[in-house]
Amino acid sequence: MVSGGIYSGKFGELRKLFNALRLRGYRVIAPKLEDGVIRLKEVTSFDEVPYGWEDIQAPGKYSVREGGKHFRHGPDAPKRILYPPRLELFRLRPDWSVEYPKERFPPTALFAIKPCDLASISVMDRVQGGIGDPYYLALRKKLIIIVENCVEPGATCFCSTMGTGPEARDGFDIAYTRLDDNLVVFRPGSDLGVELLSELNIEPATDEVLRKYYDALKNASLKAKAPFELERLPDELELGLNSPVFKEVAERCFGCAGCNMVCPTCFCFDVIDEPELDGGAVRVRVWDGCFSYTYAEVAGGNFRKDLWARYRHWVLHKFAYWVRQFGVFGCVGCGRCITWCPAGIDLRETIKSVVEWVRSRGGG
Image (cartoon, rainbow, N blue to C red):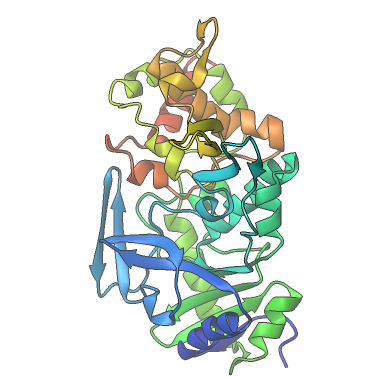
């Protein structure tokens, strides 16, 4: 009987866990290799999860190869499921009647997501959950989270600095860690997690397995660090508002808002009415981003018309303003904005440079 603690089992127990979720009627959303990219998609078979594949990430670079031990994540985050990029709010018929979308909140299991993405859900709970977004809350109530601890962080990861990984500490139903080809460590995080694990052939982890487990996570933690510390960071960044670093970096930036789109916590949106040929219309909510020129446009003009100002706003929102608003950093250290930036701009280096500029002038 599983009642808590840390357990170990063979790799095949993950398949049993996956099948147990499906038998309970959960829609399973998991990493899936699609067109050379690991996406977050609905899967119906355990074999669709890309175990045996590895993604290679660097600033502005992404590729996958077969034969690797661990995959990380692609451009998709749980935000795409819980806070979709396009959401139909209602439809206006030609007779002026209003039609609302039918029930669209199936019980959902996020399977094999990474700790940084788990942390992003916690941030979203404060933002979308805090403002009472009905779509988010309805799906969130029916969500089960199975997280895979990250023992091989990628080159753009810095979850250790942000305190969001590589080990998931809370907020999950089950956390598992693949230590080698046939050894998996499991840890329940909820009553439902305990119930699911009780159906598997696992046993309390031995001292040897625990040493292996903690060593793997310690080594991973050392790799997933950024060249800056969080202590006093919000204050130092605000002191660096006039740093030339932002203008220098913006010379390479395309202003494409790609970092807004792949970020697991960016929450800005717009509401658009789309007319239809029959005389009706659809009102939709779509993602928006502060890098877009039109984002800061108002009736009197644009209060962030320069690209460097938009870039500066994004950086400070994640690492300063967000702390003032929600009590947490808006960045979880997943590194997506670095990997998927077409110019290869490294957010970590930007922050490091601004902090150095501030300290060179006696700030901080």
